[in-house]
Image (cartoon, rainbow, N blue to C red; front, side):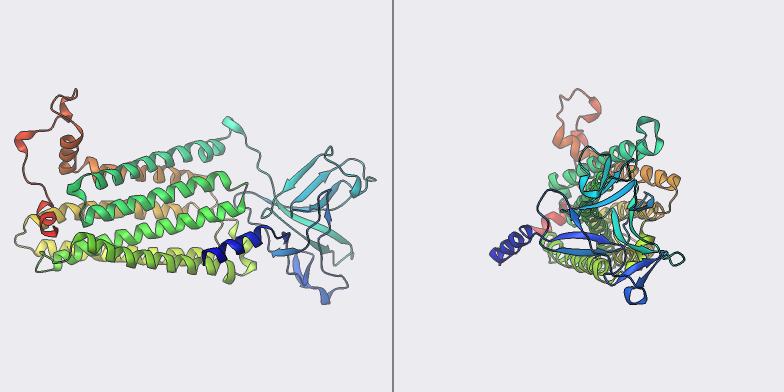
Length: 445
């Protein structure tokens, strides 16, 4: 099977077929500003003519649709005396700007002023003016963004502040994961789930950084990073919902001394959650590439993602369901806790875990809502999302590590000694008592 995949990849990589972006379907052309069948006009469908010194492709494949320009403006360019549109052999559109209208296309060279539009940032087609009957070659392109440098507030926010806050959140999420993974007392079911949630959030932050720097350069990398980010956010919410279910089920159980170990229980949760994540992600990818109609491509440019609305809906509908489940687990568990006359050490520990779960859920839900609102084409809303997203990591680090007295004590006992320079970091041996969760660890062993 592996050899078969290698052969397929080798065949694809050595294929001379290139992709050419066309605005309308292969059997349509533009009449005024709408696509119409060629049999309704007297014109033939547009076909690309390749120029350049390199070898011309053996075959080409048409990619249909208006380019997704996101936050950039779409602009039409007509092939005329001063603007020349030339299709290169690799599927790149080159726009020449010349001053002498008499120069033919085959005399254009590298010394002439030009700009190249990569695949995904243009589409070409034939356009007919219904009033005059004039036939022109048209290209709809994404206008190149000219950065204003340090004097441009938008450039500073998107290219400096946003990546810096992403890096801070990544460092905070990794710190929480390391703390829960290294300390043996935290390797219970709750600790393993929080470690997995933080890893998923780390991946989503890293993928979002990729989208910041590939949005204007590589459409394939941009949409790949977008899909990875959506998958990570989805898995984070699924794991957080499973944590709420675990706490709720434990409080409802009459016998907390369960026979199954935390390790095996975590494996069972992993099978279900990762399978659900894979199924939902594959469905969303299929919906984006196969079911999303081309007429919605012009609408996508107003949102901050390369995934279509149908794919986003498939990703985000389960997240909305997870939020409702989290609210239900919170209310139900709170009612059970209020009705309990007394509780043991395990329930006492789970109360702190429940508080951590609720605070983490509130932070992630607010971050998700701000992420969706940031797609509205107003820079102020996106700037608000940048700061909310940057606060997620430090807040979760504070909730899961710094605010937990038990974890601070364990860190002092493991990482610091009695001769530590900072007196506040020295372990207090006089208060060394049994820790939460040690009973459960002894049971599992």
